[in-house]
Image (cartoon, rainbow, N blue to C red; front, side, top):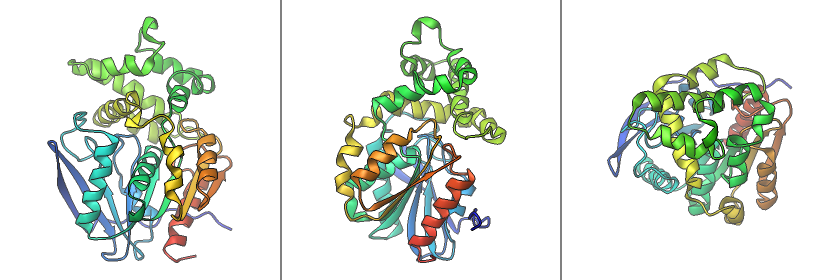
Length: 317
C-alpha cells in the first residue's frame, strides 16, 4: 500500500483579519469548498504560524478548512506581541472564528503545540468538536518542558545543544527557559534576535528524524524566529496557564469525540509517553505510533496517517 501524501496546492477562497480585542487582529483564511465539512487547523509553536502546505492535509472537495495565525505570529498583528496572549485567549479566539464561520461543530486538527491547544479547546467546548486529529501530542507538563529545554534531548543532540546554550552564561544555565525569557523580552533588538535564532534553530534542527535543511533554515529567518521564540518561551515559562497535568486529567471530557492520535516513535520534543497516556484516558481515540519518524508532520509515515485520518472522517475511506 503506497503512502498517502499532500493534496495538490490550493489557494484560499476567502481571507480576512478578525479583531479579537486586546489590540490583537488575527489573520484567517478558508480553503476547500464553502459549506463542506468544517475543519479548523491549529499550527504549532506556539508562534509558528500557518503555511500553504497546511491547506493540503484535507480533501478540498470534501472540506471547508479554516486556518488562522494565532495571536502575535504569521500575518496576525501586532507581531510577536505577548500581552493578552495566553492559551485561554486562543481558545476564545477559536470560538469567535467558529461563530464567524457559522458552524455548530467542526473537526479540530492540531500538531505539536496545536495538539495542546486542540485538547484545551475540546476539553472546554466538547460539544463543538466533531472529531479530533492530533499529531505529536504535547501536554505541557513540567517534565515535558524540562526534557526539551533542560536535560534529556540534550543527550541526543549534544552538538545542537551546545549551540542552544552558547548564548546563555554558565551561571544562568540552571533555568534556561528563564534565562532565555530575559533576553527575548530585552529592549535591545539585537539581544532579542540572537536569543530568538538560537531558540528557534534548536527546535528546527531536532524535530525531524533526519536533517531537513529547508526546515532549519526557515527557523533561522529573523521575523519567524522573533515571533516563534518570544511567544513559545512566553507560553512555556507560564506552563501554558494550565494546572500541572490538567490536559491528561481532563481527558475524560473527550468521551464520545472520535479521535486519531499520530505520533512518531522518535519524536524528540514531544515524548511518546504522553500520547500513550492520552490514548488510555480517551478510549474513543485510535493511537498510531509511526516507526522511523520524528516529530514533523511532513515526515512520510506521519503525513500518510494524517491524510488517511482526514479522508476517513470525510467519508473517503
